[in-house]
Each structure stands twice: as structure tokens, then as C-alpha cells.
Amino acid sequence: MTTSTGFDIRRIGGRIGAEILGVDLSTDLDPAVVTEINSALLEHKALVFREQNLDDADQLRFASLFGELTTAHPTVPSVDDQPNILPVDGDEGIRANQWHTDVTFVRTPPKASTLRGIVIPPYGGNTLIANSAAAYRDLPEPLRELADKLWAVHTNDYDYAAPKNEKAAEHRRRFISRKYRTAHPVVRVHPETGERGLFIGGFAQSIVGLGPSDSRDLLRIFQSYVTRPENIVRVAWAPGDLVLFDNRITQHYAPDDYGDLPRLLHRVTVAGDVPTGIDGTLSHVVEGDEASHYTPAAA
Image (cartoon, rainbow, N blue to C red; front, side, top):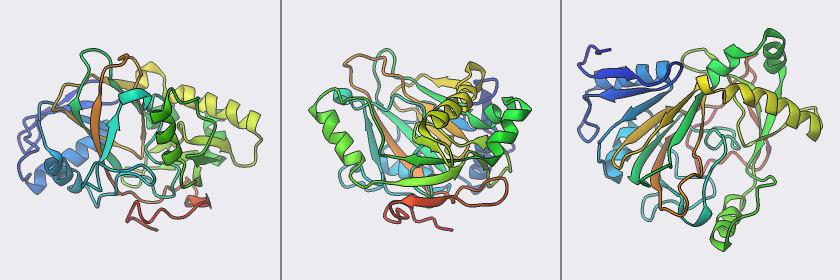
């Protein structure tokens, strides 16, 4: 598909994902181009821009076209002298190999995330991105009706697998140095499209009103619809690639399948709004604070 401003959109998955061809992200983009990229993001959920070879300043400038930026992370340090950039570094066992939506343990998770490939292993190291709106549509009606009523508590402090080494253990200690627990609707209404999506993932640890066993069982059932193969696109990285995905209606996963090889991405996230359930109720803090040091958005 060729847009009115001249760049091409090529679908790479049946339900999620497209490559954007003919756009140089290192230049100042015309507002009409930005509008069409945003429209493509809302439709395809995840966009891949190949061979962009951006630097940190370019990535920050591009991400800021979609809204105010968050700082790198609520608890984890940023890249040196770059407070808005999080290093996603697979070195020495620090790997986020679980399905998740970025930073859902705070009340105002990011609207969108950009990832830029810097050091890419010769094999493995892909990123999987799932369409949680398609997952919601796949639910049988009784499960949809149940999900519509449920709330889940998301937290950065839960029973992680044992760290592989001391560096990974120190990263874990920093990750939970400030504890957050936030209640979000299991079904979130997208603020721009009105789509309903399953808003769960790895940080969702319990269902409000249910015990641990029932919570785990229900979350496992709902999560199984998110991670159906037909709802997933696999992005095979090359150095210089950039991926933009809608954090409000996707989950992602980086398989730990590249041995002891290095892998480094830089992440920049765009501040979002407070999630809303189908009845209009907003997410609320259960433990911790509003994370105003991390995200400027508020409601």
C-alpha cells in the first residue's frame, strides 16, 4: 500500500505488523507523514523501519513526534547522559524473556515504545510482538463477558526466576528498589481507536477479588489467547533497524536463544494516559506512587 505522502506500507503479519518503506527517520518529517505513520501504527500495532542507522538524538527526535517522552524507566538507570533512553542489554543474563507490556506496574504506562537495534547477534535475538485486540476478539463470548468485568494487579515485585549471576541479581535489586502495584482493567479500551484489548502480560500477577490459584489459572487462560501464533509477528533484527509499537494494545517477548552473544537495543518510550475499562473506570495505584518522576502524563 502506498500512502498519500509517498511511502509504502507492507504487511508482514496477518493480524499484526508492517514494514514502512521510503521514510528516512533521520530527517525532519513532514507533519502529514507523521500523521500517516500514526495511522499505520493504530492499524498494524507494530511498525518496522529497516536500515535507518539512527543515533540516540535521532531516535529521541522521532519518538517525540508521537508525544512527550518518559524517562528511561521508573527504577532502572538510563544510558549515561541520556535520561530518556533505556539500554536493553542481553549481556550476562539480563534478559526480559517473558511476555509483557512495558511498565504496566505504574498507573500511566507508556503509549508507545521505540526500539533501535545497535548490537545484534548473528542468530536468534528476535522480538515477538502480539496483538492483544485480536486476542480479545478470539475469546469465546463467555470468556469475553468475564474478562470485561475483571481487574488485575500489576507489579514489578514478584517471584522472579533465580538470577543467573551477580550482575543479573544486582539488576533485579534495582528493578524492585521502588515497589509498585497498580490495578488495571483486564480489558482496556484503546483511547484513539476504541478497540478492546487484553491488558495483562507478565507484570499482571493477580485478579482483584480472587486468590492466587484462581488468579493464575484465569490469567493463564487469557494469556494463551494473546500468544496464539496467528496473533504474533516476529521481528528479525539487523543493526540500524527501528521498531515502533503501540504499548496500549500489544505485548512483546525477546526469546533468550542467542547463547552468550551480545545483544543491545536502545528503548525510548512515549508517555501515555491512564488505562480505562469498558465502564469508563480508570486504573488506580494499590501500592507505591504515581511514578511522576518517570512519566509526565496524568489524569
